[in-house]
Length: 121
Image (cartoon, rainbow, N blue to C red; front, side, top):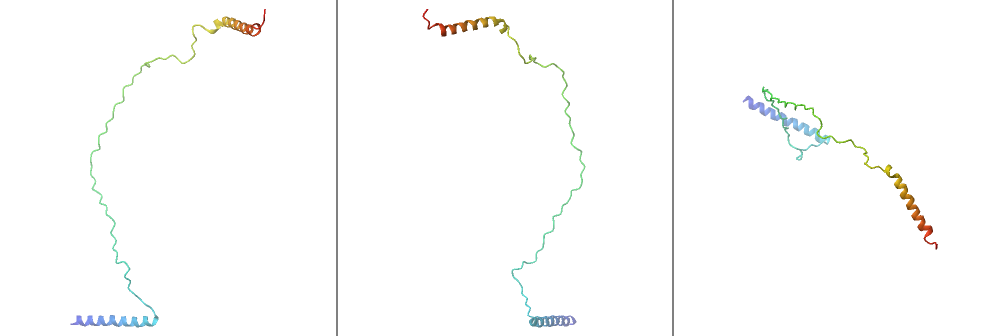
């Protein structure tokens, strides 16, 4: 029974406090409202938890080394003559006299045509 009496007394005190606040705010010109567009209570999702696996010992993979190829010292397979100028068997110097003779005959023939063809000898 005491429990029921306490509940009735608590309810009456809450209603009385509300009436006093309502009367004070009515004379002060304040207002309050409940917004429907306000989002509800958001409970954020906790950060993901990373479980590190227990350490496991394993033997590392074997390392294989390929042996170096054998070293061979041998001469090159092809010997080419060095790049340069090679003279022919017969040189132009040997024909210099023939060349001068040819030029002399050609000059004489050209000048003879030029100066002697139109003469009446």
